[in-house]
Image (cartoon, rainbow over all chains, first blue to last red; front, top):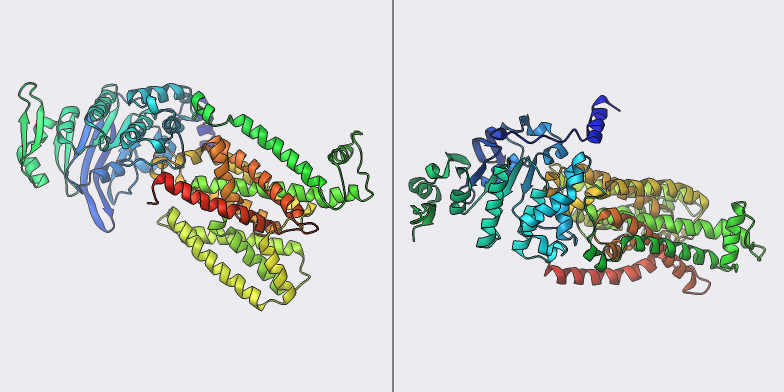
Length: 280
Length: 357
C-alpha cells in the first residue's frame, strides 16, 4: 500500500476526510475566464464567476444562453476549453469524485430513476458520499429532515416511478439536500412545480444559504430570481452580460435587449417588491 | 453504505422480508440439490445420499446406498452435476443482476453483450477443426476465451469519447451476435457430420459433461465473480439515478462499468464453457427477485445468485426426467420457459411506462 492509500484509509477511519463547513463569505466555487466548446461551437465564452458561502446566485437568461452549460461546467461535467474552475480553493480536476460529492450537490433538470426504488431510498442515495466517513451516523436524520423540508414525507414509501412530476421534483431536491454539502447547484428546481411549491423550494434555497450554503440556481422566472437571490447573473449567447444584486441588474433596458421582447420592471404597489413582466 | 438504504416497516409489509426470502432460497436450493442427487437410473433414496455424504465426512450416520453402483454413481456422476448446476446457475443469475444494474436497464442479459455467441464460435471452431475426438477441456477453453474476447470487443466498439451508452452497447451486441451467427452457420456447413452434431448439441446446452475437473475450474471463477459483484453492489443502486447523477454522487461510472463487465464476462464465459449456451436465466432471475426483495442490489445480487442456482437445478431435473431415458437439452428448456416470460415482461414494462421512449 502506498502512503497516500494509507493516509486516506486512516482519514476514512477517523472521519477526518469530512470537509469543514466554509466560513460565511468564503468563496466556494470560482470560474476564471472559462470557455466551453461543445460540438465545435463555443457555448460559453470567457466567463468569470464566483459564489460565496451564505448567498443565493441566480443564473438567468434566454433559452440557449448557456445557463445549464455553466452549471454543468461548475459540476465538473464538461471539460473547459480555456480557463479554470475551482471548488473550495482547488482545481476541479484535482478532486476525486467522492471528495467532490462531499462538497457540492447537483440537482439535474430531469429526474428519472430506473427500477422501483422508493422515494426514501432515492433520498438516501444522496447520503452515499458519506458512507465511509463518521458522518454516516447522520444518515437517517438527514434523510428525514430533507424529506420533511421538501414536503416529501407523505409519499416516502411509494416507488419514485409512480410519483407525479411535482412530487418527483421534490424528492430529487430532498436527495440533494440530504447530501449536506456546502455548495448546491440547482438546475431549474422550480420547473415542474405549482406556485406554492415554487415558493417552498426557493424559500428552502434561501434558508440553506442563510445557514451557510452557497447556492447557484438556474431560473427562468425572473420574479423568483428577484425575490430570492442575493445576486443575479444574466447570460446571453454564452457571455456574462450582468452580475449584481437583483435591484441593479434586472432593469427594463437590459432584459428587453437580452430577451428580445419588451419587458417591464415595476414595484409592487404595497410591498415594493420587484415585479418583472413581459409587455402584452 | 450498509445503512444508507433502510427498509421501512410499511415497505416490508408489501415486500416479503428479505431474510425470509434468502433463507427460503437456501432451503429450496438444498432440497432441489438433494432431489437432483436422488434421481437417475441407479435408484437412491435421500437418506442414502445424506448417509453417503456423511460417511465421506467420516461421520458414521445414515445408510450407505444399497445399490452396488450407488456410491460410484453419486460421487462420479450426480454430485459433480449438481454442483456444476449450482455454480453455473448462480453465476448466470448473478451476472444478469449485475449487468441489469450497471446499465440501469431491466432488459440486459449476458447474451446481449456477446458472451454466448462468442463462446459458441470458439467451441465450434475447435470442434470443427479438431475432429470428432477433440478433448472436451479444449472445447471449454476455446469457448471461455472466445466468450471473454467477444464481450471485450463489444464493449470497446460501443465505447466512444470515454463513455458507453446503453443503446449503443445493445446495438453493438446485436451486430456482433449476428456476425457470430454467420460464423457458426459457416462452421456448421463445412463440418463433418459427427462434428456437426457436436456443434449443434453444444449450442443446445447440457450438464451432461459435468465432472469434478469442470467443477474445479468453474468454482474459483464463480467465487471470485460473485464476491466481486457483492463488493460493487452498493454503488450499482446509484446508477439507477442516471449516469450524471451517479457521477455527482461520487461514483466513477465508467470504471464501475468496466469492472462490472469484466465480472459478467468471467461469470458467463466460465459457465457456458462447460455447459454450452443457456439463455434467459440471467434475464429472468433478476426480475423475479426484484419483485420479491426490491431493487436494492445489496440484496438483489445474493438473491439472484441463489435463485439462478435453483432455476438451473430445477431445469436440469426437468431435462433428466421429463422424457423417460432421455437427457433433454438444458438450454432448450430454459429458452422454452424464458422466452414467454421475456415477452410477458416486455408487455408489462411497456404498460407501466406507457410505451418506450
